[in-house]
Length: 248
Image (tube, rainbow, N blue to C red; front, side, top):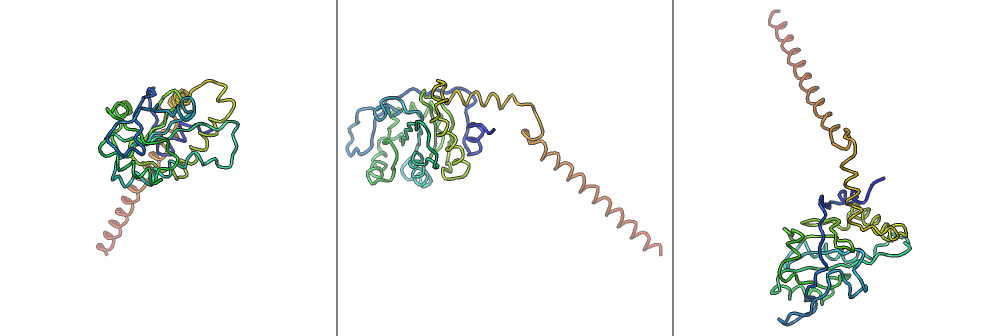
């Protein structure tokens, strides 16, 4: 059975090897702000929306003028609506945040927000002192990070993510289904802890040709050796044919 962590990797996401926990930062919500005054802070994990930290928080870092950011952001905002036709006992509470790190340039993104270009997001958050970007080691724009309700990093990507790809759809379907099951909710296990156990199990699997990629390498070596001996055979055949022709 393919695990969630394996599906995440197949979707082009990175999975952390170490436990990384992000506090429920109180950050300014800049959505719709048209002045230079800093609005009151809001909890990062959408506590004001759900009454508690969301089951899953999706953070999307962007900048004005980032052409690769907008189409993906629109797809990301539609993720909670993708139920894949399967009903779950208790749908997961999903918080999607747009994060900017520059107050001076956030006005442009706020205007895009007001124009309805970020449907499905719970507002634009200003990472005022860069604490969030530093804790997550954001090194590219766009950047995507997935956190569980305890703030543990589950999966991420410093760069574009194809949210409409078949790989991501398979991962998202399995993820939201798992989060909504009675077994998972009653277990008390966080999603980040689940991923850590899966990764430990994956790394402890017996070494074999298939999971280490050695079988393709072996075929490559065999192919090179076969080509080498075929070339030698034809060169020797040509030499013999030329020698017999000269002697005649």
